[in-house]
Image (cartoon, rainbow, N blue to C red; front, top):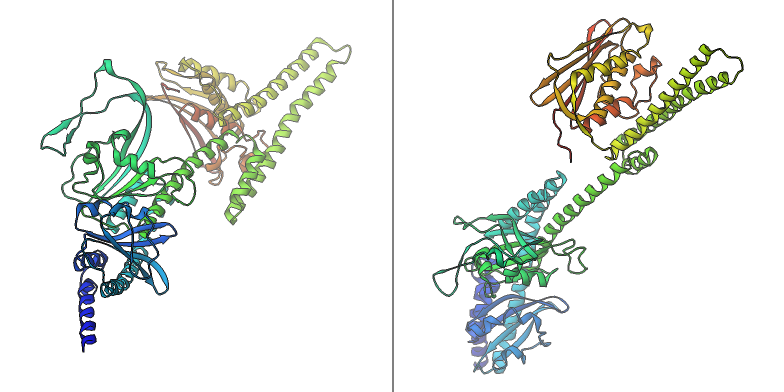
Length: 635
């Protein structure tokens, strides 16, 4: 009969302790309520539920502390290794030397998942008391497992959405600031938090001063004002500023905070920096400075998690680069940050860190490619490596190879033809008894073909300089009317007499003056007029129009020719590209002329466009329109 009463007593006491498990309360609060119930039932000053995450890594999953003394050691408890305690065992805890600290392991079947720690004074630990404590530990272990499963289920539910939205923004090449805004907003909403911040570090050589802010003083109702030092007392030094680049606040009353502050003025930031690459958790009981209270508002948002932003946020390996900021998440009441939640936050931040590295790598790659674009073969091999995955990429590679072969064939012909003429002229000049007129004729041939060869080589070199951004910009004041007239007349005199082309100039009555690169403008006008002379139909007119609009100069060169096909028109300015009409009509050229014009127009901060509109029958009016600014500020 006595044994039955004892069993009933033990059963009722255990049921009383574990009542939060059966109550219809928020399941996320069960572990905290269970710790409070254990502390109350055993008249303890402190109760802690410790969870073993990995060998040597412990976290406080829940706590219930009655006295300030036991509350103050909660953050230090994971640094002390509890004894092995399959049954309730006394733990000689250095931080609580004057307490009787009992510990018993919690289990998931045969695996030890953590331990239950109790700090008491004046409690007699009879065999029955230890038995109740051990049986309660089994319920605590079950609650610990349930919390883990609930957190994992919650993370499994929200992770796809968070991952998809952030990945979509990365794919769309959104700016890093926008990625932070998306990630922080989603995290605050998904984890039901109050505020999220992104802080970045910036080191600069600045005077030792900062803006004046009214900072609340924790010891009185007045405020402390930080005044900037006088000019005579300014000392230049290297300082690290913390910039607030993103703020997501779900509260209605959102106080204004300064956008920057010095790292040395924030104890929380310095602690988080020293703790990197691991996340740092603050529970509202940490030492803070005036800047901390202003920025983090730990009196209203006591629970703070700071995740470091770095090249690699995985604590199991060295970071790829130094800490460059933090993701800060805050809540308005005490909150246990589960390792699975912190892992989720690290994964999101790791995605942004990777996107940041990729943007930097992409920028460096583009610069490297721009320098080497003149090496056609290397460029084509790179295209093979980058685009061998699909049919469309292979088609582009095939077209590039055709252009290369056509260019080599054309450039070979263009180089050999002048050389052949010069060789023949030299051979004739070596003959004895040649009359002066014939000698002069051969000398003119030599000069003409030599100039043709020099122009071709100069075009190739200039195109390479433009592509690699090495061509120097030399601005000078130009009167446009005589400038255009002189270049147009010079080119018109070189048109084939067999075509009987006419030149028509339409210039303003008052000659406009602009400041631009004269050499580049001269080459553009000459090349467009040479091109017009090549393709113009016989006995037609080539027109040049010059107009001024606002702060722009517009030069239009038009001629009547065979229509340019819609397939060739978009590619007319591509290097080494020659239209089908030029090939069929055997018109001389390398395919570099218009590409060089386009590069020079870009070099002058201008634009160029081409149209080919049918006039009648098989005749089209082809117009090249060049627009350049009247004054160019070139740096």
